[in-house]
Length: 288
Figure (cartoon, one colour):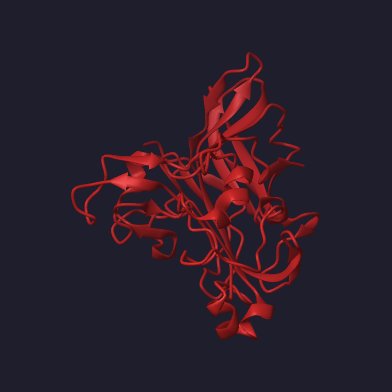
């Protein structure tokens, strides 16, 4: 592995890394929004259908296999800078919570970018996968390298990592939690995306396969790393979901369970097949 020197750091965004004569350094910028509003820990938003007052308490996700699309339409993999913190092999963690306000379960540090190199050339688009590749997904988070060492983003060896974790608190339901729980409601609506249907001889062992990988490939035909930002939009993700109720006898929110109707609209907006329906166009990410 070649060590690439970092020569400048400006806030969360501009990181310049020396490039070789045959490659060019690229920074893919990300941001989290709630519709047109910026995402903020502890801020209350009206989201879902019908609109429900919720307060986000987590917003993190892994991306992998990031690539730029050249003028011939070919995806050219981005070789990620191995920084020992946010990026490992072909996986990167984007982290928009800062442990402030309601986000007490997270970390103080945030990360809004993916950094790597591609062969010098002209590129017109961007491709990435929301999720962790199968070969890295079923590691032990206790011994895994950063950023795969966060137990708050890991289920177990069988199901692997939570590719995305967005936790939503509902103040209205908290005031009458007992009553609502009797009706199948909860005090919050966590959204945890990960693989399901993973098969292994023993639950503590790595699976041989997962019937629902739940990794979502995202392609933007037009993207300029020097001008554009990838936006992860919470409002778009839950636009068709009632965040004030929970299917009876199911985990709170959407934990990716294939029989949980609370996941129907969310999985569709991730661009994933679910409930016997084929995948549709994802709506969670957009380019600005």
